[in-house]
Length: 423
Ligand SMILES: NC(=O)C1=CN([C@@H]2O[C@H](COP(=O)(O)OP(=O)(O)OC[C@H]3O[C@@H](n4cnc5c(N)ncnc54)[C@H](OP(=O)(O)O)[C@@H]3O)[C@@H](O)[C@H]2O)C=CC1
Ligand SMILES: O=C(O)C(=O)Cc1ccc(O)cc1
Image 1 (spheres, rainbow, N blue to C red):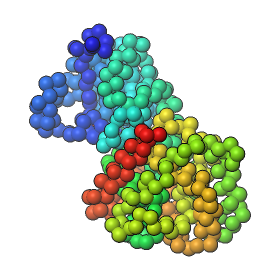
Image 2 (image 1 turned 180 degrees about the horizontal axis):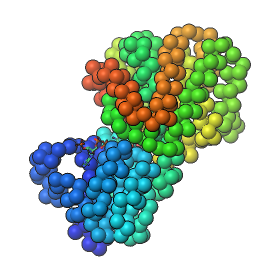
Image 3 (image 1 turned 90 degrees about the vertical axis):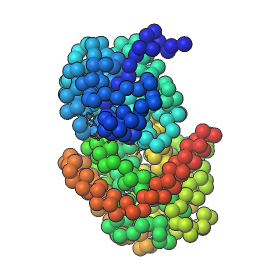
Image 4 (image 1 turned 30 degrees about the vertical axis):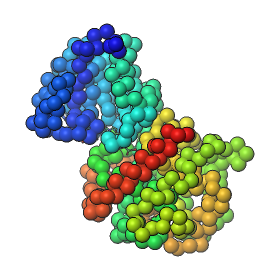
């Protein structure tokens, strides 16, 4: 049965045929790729897509959304529905309001996962910005084929939550990559970065640097809610690192424990579930070091990045569990290892001890601190070009190792997603 009256003739148009729109770019190649799909028609430009479609989804670079909607928006079919798939809704909604004819309904969306992740069960945000119930129901019916979990938010709520689940999470991994690059090391090749927590850091860092820069730059720079968080993350990193360098053990302990209580709750009323978010052992085997023994004990690390994340959440009054509705697989893994550090008996104290007494990670921590501040400044100043260059030079450093490594990260995420299904 048709999901709604007239569904057979309801045309869905995509403007932007990249990784999220559909894996290809140019007209001739797209025509060839979709030659056997009778119900998919490739058109030469967004004007033709706009004229022919009942529901148009813009899936272009976030920074280009204003320009692209200005270009094609006026060609939108009378009474059509328009939405976007960009990662940050503030500029997208502004562009729609400014350039779309007033008879057009606006329903935006955002799949909270990358192009290589199975969409089934993953959050899909739907934003009914300016639409009749009927139009909204049509969009829901169309997107139901993804079998994602529909989450209903306003554009502002979306940006506030994804500033945490995406922008600040990425800032941590981007900073790790810069730190390892600055010290000219592939961390999995040494003996210092072994074990589950380190596998997550390394694999997700590589995953991000293997992608397109504009996705990460866009969602950090263009999201007005993200600046505060990225800035606080840099501040937390710097202040905790000072306490470590200056040997102020009592203050460090007091600050980290206060943050723990605020973010994860006090010992007798924890905010985490009975079952850990990341069950023991799931990520241990996904090491890039072919010689690594999966059950070898990890080298004690002060985990500055994880302590800083919790300090940042605490300073901003964020409870990350409240944001699970808008979580990406990457965020759940990041929160999973953070939770692991804070709930495993003895692990947090070991971290604090290493932070004060042990110099093993000092150089990397120094570079991590510099990198976190560098990203924060670049975002605050809205420097797209500098952001791109900072990203590109480190991407180039890791590029020779992407082959094989990206697959290990992909397998790790798959294993974690499978585990989530069982719980
Ligand atoms: N990648 C991800 O993990 C996710 C990305 N997103 C968001 O989805 C959007 C698209 O990202 P993604 O697919 O990864 O990026 P891509 O760079 O792969 O795709 C963007 C596409 O938009 C096209 N485009 C740009 N301007 C125009 C135009 N004027 N007319 C027609 N096409 C145009 C580009 O074509 P050309 O290359 O020819 O310029 C390109 O194919 C972004 O806003 C991103 O933030 C959302 C969820 C996940
Ligand atoms: O999981 C993540 O955070 C990713 O890196 C993939 C991603 C990137 C951009 C989005 O808008 C949504 C998902």
